[in-house]
Image (cartoon, rainbow, N blue to C red; front, side, top):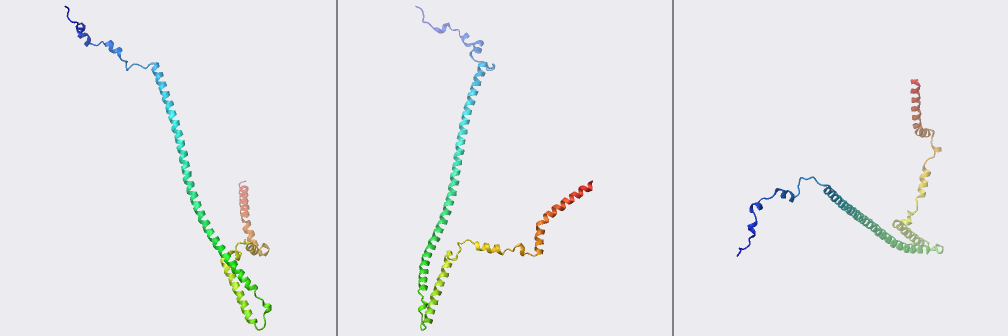
Length: 223
């Protein structure tokens, strides 16, 4: 009976331990080999793709930067505008409140003054000197003078409190006329004063004329 089959009996161990140099050279690529045209084309395409991606990323960053700059500008405009309008409104509110207080105070003072003026006017108009007699003349005259003096004191006191009674709201046209009329005219000046004014107005022209004459004399001297 034949023995069992052993596959190791047909394998040469010396042959398997030695590697063929040809097989080693054909199994891997040579790193020192020059790149082929396909390799160069492939690298060019890869480089172009990377450039396109970088350009797209750059454009995206540019848009993002522009958006951030616009946002920063709007934030600065908001902060500056809010600060300015708060200051303006606060100042305006203070001025209006003060003006309102003064106007209310003046209005109350005017109402009181109107009542006092009416009472004083009624007292003055109630004086009827035509019915005085010799017996009560001194008494009625003293009483009438007292009434008029009280009315005058009321008037002077109201003028100090209310500028409208003192005529301060009227334009100072009369003052301008007085100052204009107070300025002396040329006809009122003396001869010496007129000479001084003429010299002050014409001495620049004299200097220019003297300079021109000097230049003309220098030109003649050269010839």
